[in-house]
Amino acid sequence: MHGYGEDGTAINKKAEARETIAKALRELDFGASEKLARINSVGSGWEQDDIDAVLPFHPDGIVIPKVESFEQVEWASRIIETAELKHGWPVNSVRVLIGVETAKGILNLKEIAAHPRLDAIIFGGEDFAASIGAARTRDAVELLYARQAVIVACAAFDLQPIDIVTIDYKDIEALRVESEFGARLGFVGKQIIHPAQVEPVQKAFTPSDEAIAYAKRIVETFEASQRGEGRVFIGWQDDRYALAEEREESIGTWVGSRTLVRV
Image 1 (tube, rainbow, N blue to C red):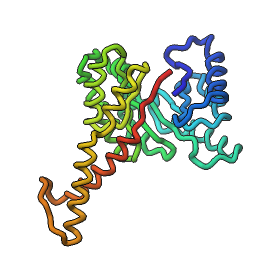
Image 2 (cartoon, helix red, strand yellow):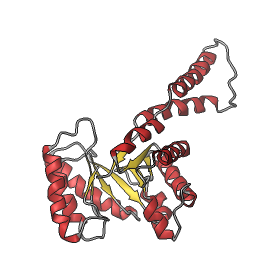
Image 3 (cartoon, rainbow, N blue to C red):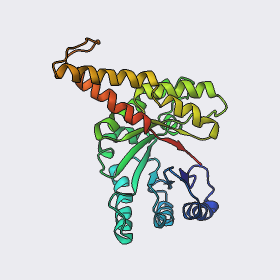
């Protein structure tokens, strides 16, 4: 994910950043990786120039930070739709990913997540903590409510929830613990800021061979019982097939999870 560094790029460097991102999209071969361009927040005054600079190169998605309303997503969607029609691209070929990083954004998740062009919600833990006056702690307990709110909204609208950044990129153990906890909560991917974070995050969000085999056994056992081939009790109740389907679907979600590299 390439961005204009909405929090870190000096005002007098914004134009240069746009040129750099446009050149990267035009000239670099990203292979199988998604090409995502992060613009400045809607209302910053720089967002129009940002999106105009990258759209001609047909990125896979536009990332909008600090989203607090449905209207902010709709603003980008209208511009993207115009570009798709102009260039003859398939409808919805450019997706929108958003960062939710404030108290207002969390409160408005139900409306925001309903936008049809949305693909994922990225939770910005550091900015959210600042917005509510919370002190950041190692176990991130101050972020738990908001993290779960993002997961619930994504589950309700079939979006991908992307978890917080682990700021201390040298602390691989903290990254591992935080990544595994995020995966257990229901996140399907995590933001990273350093190459050293790639492997631990991918490992945390990829199911083990044992988990895959167990989920397949659940599905196979129930389907066999439905064919009259007998039943083996494995510990679930009336919703056992629904649970089995969810487990199998989760495997596909985990394997296809996103690791967002912020550069």
